[in-house]
Length: 413
Image (tube, rainbow, N blue to C red; front, side, top):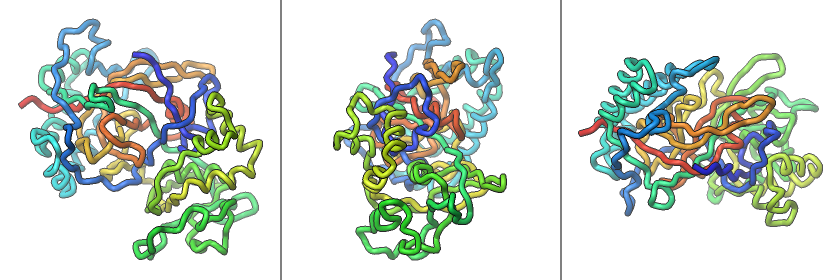
């Protein structure tokens, strides 16, 4: 498979503060807001999003074939993450017991994909993961017992565009100081009564994000950041881990947002001739704002949507089905099309540390659970892969991209 680096936008929370020196990534495709959208009730599309397919059960070498998940058992000097997969399965099984899941699956576009079948499939797959002693043993059992439903992709032929997201870690203060002066806000208690169209970003925080006492949100400040871009990036990501000045940690998550569409700041820079198309790499966009900080007043407000937050303290990053997302074992898809909480298999190239600050790509077959959604994840041809929390996860998410395939696994009937 040909490696194609992700096209990413500056205002999308993709590792801009931790650029990989070897990565020169063009800017354009939006990153989703993980966990920021309610899960839609599926409507029957004209073309079913998934298609039952036959897979090669005798391909060689087995390690290059579907359902070979080497990361579960790890290898030399590498710890496997089988426990993480089991945890992610348990999270989905808990979701599938809810009334919300029952309501969603009553309307799923493919009648053979039912709540009970998804639940039985996860339960049996969990047993196989526990019993299997190697990638080969698990692969053989999965191919024997499970049917593979492939996403039709963005071209009707199974081509799926992959990106990745992560949970950043930022430093912020509970009180305003001369250093910490850029706020994030709580959800206003009367937000549901706000007239539409909602106020725009510039109306709520001003051009420079320092509207302060003149802001209609004054008094709802949750945390204060020392870097305006940090606060903006949290709006993009929808959640973050927070390091407080006293050494303590907390976390914040999405609480609500005004109703405006996504605007790519990278595209705006290109449109205005501030950067050439061949200069839209993460380091160059970041360098542009460092050299021209006043330009933030012009460009950042162009994304009119404004996000509100709540303190989640020790609660981990949570997906749209209201269960924690697990690093490298959870994905976000369009929940109006894809079965929530279900077992899936990603087949694409992902970046891994290669030493000396560089990343290298390798083809993976990874069992994951579909537990999240995003405002930019639309159609059957989009998947967003959760990398985890912190700098390395951000580095990897920032250069994840390209085409691949996506399968959902259900017990044969």
